[in-house]
Amino acid sequence: MSNPFAALPAVHRVLASREVADAGACYGAAVARQAARDVLAAVRARVAHGDPVPALEALTSEVRSLLERRAAVAYPEVLNATGVLIHTNLGRSPQLAVSAPGYVALEYDLTSGERGERLTPVTARLVRYFGGESATVVTNNAAALVLLLAAHAAGREVIVSRGELIEIGGAFRLPDIMAASGARLVEVGCTNRTHPDDFARAIGDNTAAILVVHRSNFALAGFVATPELKDLVDLGRRRGTPVWVDQGSGCHLDLTRYDLRHETTVQQILADGVDAVLFSGDKLLGGPQAGIVVGTHSAIAGMRHHPLRRAVRPDKNSLAVLAATLDAYLAGRPEEIPLYRLLAAPASTIRSRARRIARRLQLDRIEAGFRPSRAVIGGGTTPDQTVPSWAVTIPGGEDAADRLRRARPAVIGRVEEDLVVLDLKAIFAEQDAMLARSVATALAG
Image (cartoon, rainbow, N blue to C red):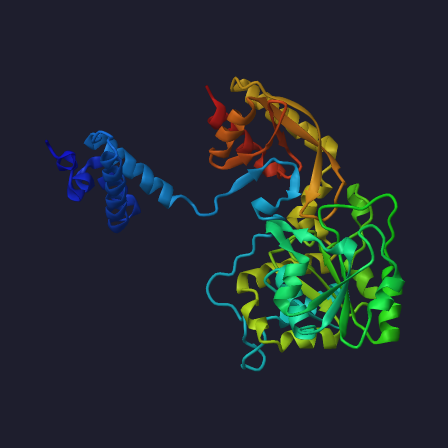
């Protein structure tokens, strides 16, 4: 009986083929050699299970395909036509493009010529913009909460309303985060109703703080009660108990100017006298991924001196983008921030853009239309609120949506009743031509 494996070509024969040689010149000889070995190993496994030996041309094509997949951009650009402005799976808020090539004065004081503190430029801006006595920055808001709890509540109790024991993205739950920090959770009240007296009765000798948590991705309505923050601050002062607020969303502007309901801002929370408020940098702040804490000197000092701080400190690129973002707000120019440029675009303008894109696609023999839509902010920031928008519609349902995801750049929309809906609220006007080209290329024919 003949040995089927004998018909398999050696690695050097695969590499010598024109298709793989050209790919090797593009992607690197070592990378091409490894791809050839990996493909041959997979083919041997298939042959061992009874599959025929493929022709050399099929093998070389498989190697080329593997090389192209491995060389693909790790985090490719996408066009966000979902109608979700702060899209967790697409990097949350679009952010300023701030380049920091070469070396930067990250931990260097140009005045004294001595070592400096990397956070000083950003924390000075945070205090100027939000208020408070001091501030710090870590990698994300979950890290900010862990560091705050570890610094001030390890081995002690933190009181939280049962209506605020949230689960955030990725199945991370507040009780689990608190346990990881070494703090002990004390639940008070009920899911729908919690009163100041519930907190008062729970405060004891081992209480480290009261923690108030923003309800992300959901809202309570009906027979509900939540203590006023000022009442909890007054209670905390009488009993010597700090009050911390995990505001999460980073709301800092009056959202009514963007056709949204009013949300309590970081500035208002600080004005109520809390000891610390923490929030994300890449939600309503519209900056990079970061966890920001603003509050009293004592609250921030404890975090700065904790050993975990170095493990969660932000990198130079995040700090540069955060500083530039804060500079725009301090100058009174929020529409310089991409998120607020999108939010400020009127529905009438978006309608005109949707009509133009649909007509352009029709010239490419694509059955495109346009219709009103409702966009959402997303990111757990403003649950149950929407803003008016317009969308381009394309028939084809999931099949068309799949082809659009494989376009370059990829177009990410949503499917409704066998239509692909491309909401333009999170598409910048200067991206319209790119969007039309990607759709036409993906769906032509």
